[in-house]
Length: 376
Ligand SMILES: *Cc1c(COP(=O)(O)O)cnc(C)c1O
Image (cartoon, rainbow, N blue to C red; front, side, top):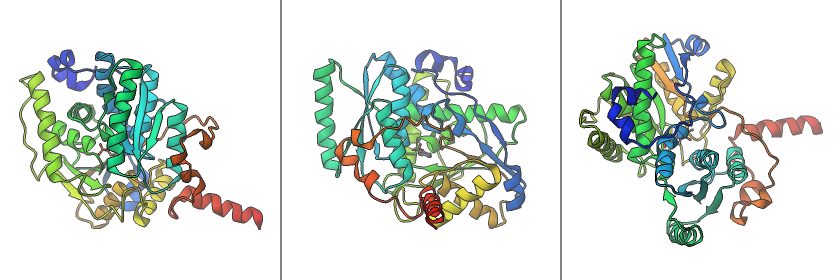
């Protein structure tokens, strides 16, 4: 049973939930990185292993969101993201496993290998994907799709917020903090001084901050911005924190009302780079270091930037002796490659497969290097 439900049985009775994830996710030391970074206590939380088909942070949120979809007997969800969205893919995969269809309303982004893979995989899991050039066309087509499917399927699709970061979705990371507390009590990790993680639609960071407070941990969350600051900032975090807290308190009045303060979380903007999903040199360096030393694969859009912040801060010496936990939010399961052909995708996505990926996308660099060697 989820540790949140053990602590608050009334929440178990009232919250929608469907078990999809492999929990608890392991937490362990990064011995080799500890040595090379000259840090004393560096740990990783393996949310990359959270799902058997597709891990990462989205599956935890989907346990609550798709639980709600099942309760409401909806047959289709409609969600949002950028073209390479891990959230849209996770939704397609796990909704499919429950017999629920997915419609994804997507926006353009920087090209990368993972964008191609995620699009092909969404298609493989029978998601209906659409790309829009502007917010306005996205809005208009969303209204159209809702109407279309309501008439066609006799039910209005269930709307899932971008990144799954509604108050209901964020509760998954409140639970994750309870899970961490158990792992501390079991001696797998001392109480962390800091948790490093990427900050996107904020559900992960906000849920954790709320959960850490609720279980009485003094850990500070270092939230590394990976989207434009207009989408993720302190004001928005406080709002999501309060909404999530109210929801929990309204379902179980013994769940305390808490307040997010500046001791709880710090937003770091310096590792964002130029734009969402544009990889940075520091991020790529951090990814290489994690891969070479620990054989764990991070990504250029989210976790690479967060890990770059962690490395930077450790090199500044003042936190070398602290307990630092890197919360890995990126899937590390290899996806079944079904040999899908991109021509089966809507035309608006074809350019991702025809155009080059961004220069810092390493996989592409490696392939290019190999090709050079061969032709030589
Ligand atoms: C979505 C995502 C995040 C951001 O989490 P939010 O809850 O949206 O802030 C971080 N890492 C990865 C790999 C993601 O896919």
